[in-house]
Every structure is written in structure tokens, then in C-alpha cells.
Image (cartoon, rainbow, N blue to C red; front, side):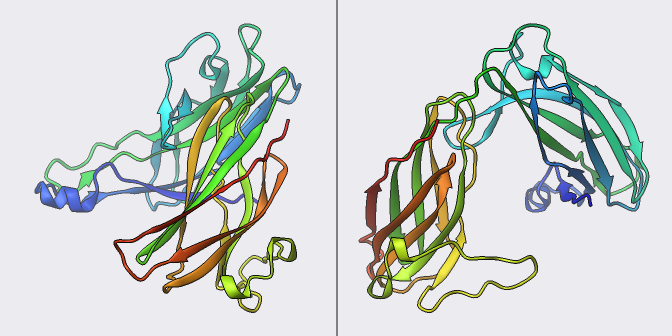
Length: 301
């Protein structure tokens, strides 16, 4: 079964548009499956398919194009200049322009065909699908905006190394909110990601890191927390690219009254387990934040 991630493309936010005196914006509704594709460059089956769905009540015309990308230190996607070693030059796809009827889908096929010997490791590109605006009524007061979404493509060549290191976890606690900051390094040539769960316990009732485990969850069913556990959620799984270091911020959505707590982690980084309990304090005085830093060493090759 195909699961489409629904997205709305809006070029101008409604608040900004109203502030500038611009008429209200109209958005398109499109989705894509899968949102991410991984390819082994020397694999004979490196030809892949992507499906785009139109959830709108009107047909949508789209164009496709590809760009290579990276992630900056703040976790924001940045397009990079095309070179003979960037993946965008090796991807061929069809069709490049198409129209999807209301409620319909379109299949786009692509393949990776390097024009030279790829450098070993991970290569990244984004296959974008962008709306081609329809010609509207000149007297209309509606601004038609352009929608765009992208499918991340990861291609691997030669020896792939994933060497993730969790340097530390810093719990920044304030009365108006708590966040955990994970300092992660990647000394390999392919991305690593954190996976797993975190939980918040009152310090006095925390059973210890070795006594806790990830909760079992089921689709469309509420999660039942163990006795004394206050809150639980998923770890930040944003990718840390090869040969980079970045901080992954995890906001704790639960409102915590002043007191002593433990951030319990049951997860992994690049396949290496993370099993840790980090104490922290939420103080009553907003001008006296508490920050607890815990060094952790975790690596994999």
C-alpha cells in the first residue's frame, strides 16, 4: 500500500500577505511516495520509481528537476554547486513534465548512471517536483502560488563507513520549557541518525537506566506509560552527514513543574546502543536556568 505524505505549497504566508495588502493565497495539495530513496550505484536494480499524488479537485501540471544538496550546521538544507562528482549529474528520469488529474497519480522513473568512477561513500541529490502555475483570471483577487516538494535520493559507492559519535547530551531546563541538545559527530563518509525513544521521570522514582526500555507502540493506539513515567517521545532522527559535527535539539513538550527529573534515553546511533539517564532540575526562578551536561562516547564503523 502506498502511503503519501501530504503537503501544501504556499509561497507567501497568509499573515505576511495580509500585512502587505496582497489578496489571499490559494495552495495546491500534492503528496509523494516514497519520500526517500536509497540506491547502491553498482546494483543492477538501481532503477527506481516515485509516485506523486494530486489531492486537489483540480488538475495540476508539474515539472521535475534534480539538485545536489548538503545540510549546514543548523540542520538546514543547502543546495550545492554541481560538479562531475555530484549525484545530480548522474540521475536520469522520465517524465520531466506532466499533468496529474484530480485525485490521480503520476509515476516518475529514475536511474543512477555515473559518468565517471564515483568517490567512495554517500552521494546525495533531491528530485524536486514543482507546480507549473495555471494562467488565472486577471480579474481574480486570488494569488495562485507555486507548490514544490522533493524526494531525497541517497546513492552509495565503494566502501561506506558510518562512524557516529555522541559526544555529549546537554539538558537545558527552564520553567517555560526543557530541551535536550545532542552533540553528534560523524567521522565516516555516510550519514548516521539517532533512533529510539526518550522518557522523563521524577528523579526520586527513576528506576535506573538499565531497568528501563523502549515502549512498545501500535498504530492508532494510545501509548500507556509505565507507573511514575511522566512523558515519552521519539529521539531527534535528523541526519548527521559524513565528516560533520552538529547539534540535534530535542524539545520536551511536557510542561514540568519545578523539581528534579531524569531524561532517560533508550536508542541507538548508527547501530550502537544509547542507554543513559541524565539528571536535571527545573527551577522556579526563570532567571536561573539549569544546564546538565553528560559526556557520552558511542561509535560504530
